Image 1 (cartoon, rainbow, N blue to C red):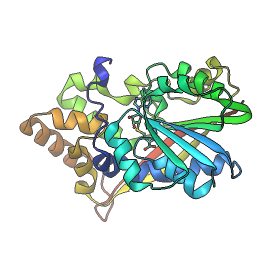
Image 2 (tube, rainbow, N blue to C red):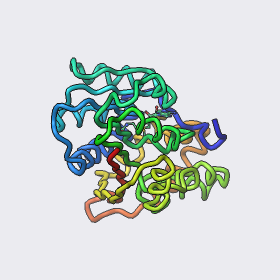
Image 3 (tube, protein in one colour):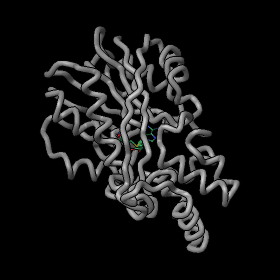
Image 4 (tube, rainbow, N blue to C red):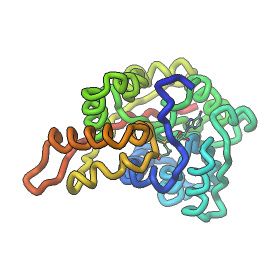
Amino acid sequence: MPPSARHDAWQAGDSYEAYMGRWSRPIAARFLDWLGLPGGLDWLDLGCGTGALTQAILRQSDPAGVLAIDPSEGFIATARRALDDPRVEFRLGDAAALATLPEASRDAAVAGLSLNFIPDRVAALREMRRIVQPGGTVAFYVWDYPGGGMGFMRAFWDAAAALDPAARDLTENRRFPFCTREGLAALARDAGLEPEVIAMESPSVFRNFDDFWHPFTLGAGPAPGYCMSLSPDARERLRARLSETLPRQADGSIALGTRAWAVRARV
Ligand SMILES: C[S@@+](CC[C@H](N)C(=O)[O-])C[C@H]1O[C@@H](n2cnc3c(N)ncnc32)[C@H](O)[C@@H]1O
């Protein structure tokens, strides 16, 4: 694990849901709208986490089956509790587990907000391509970290780095510089795919400062993992700095946008 990944905390499913679920679920639905695939397909969801994309596939895409894989026991347990559906199989494993799946055994292989966390992402995409049958779809989406597409994370890390210069190396825009339209297209091409890339944008509005801050104190995900690694005093300094610097709307809410890049390719 690279040192910059040491705060990647992928265990507590409920805490992750409070931090990310409210933003990742709408984006999963948008992604499937864009794919526009017919019903009756066999899907793979790589890095399924707590099941945001898996659930959207069940709701929107009328699948024959979904094999949903993630290396986090806690996340898989949360997803299993939330999605009791005979069409889904949750399996504990990382991207390397794809090697155990037969060639051309799926119609669609997708990954929601997870590809950037996979150390060898080109290998993962190659495996997704291998297990999808000709004419099928390989597709994924990630946040536009370099372009500031995760406004609330950028605000958090800007404040953190102002107080602790070492935090600069932990920011997702430094860790995942390839999460640009061109970078992702190049990744897909390296894996032998002919990609199409679009931006998916949506607002993220926090009711008030507590609504913004509380999820960072739950410890699930890189920024919350960092937040909870701080001493109580250092955490309070960070909270105070964010509280002073975040722009508020007239009603006290905090509006920060999200943008993800979505990539799809036919096999
Ligand atoms: C930001 S979460 C996204 C989860 C979910 N797909 C969603 O949209 O909410 C990233 C996920 O990637 C998973 N992950 C991390 N390393 C991985 C790897 N090597 N192979 C597969 N998944 C991985 C984590 O366990 C985590 O569930």
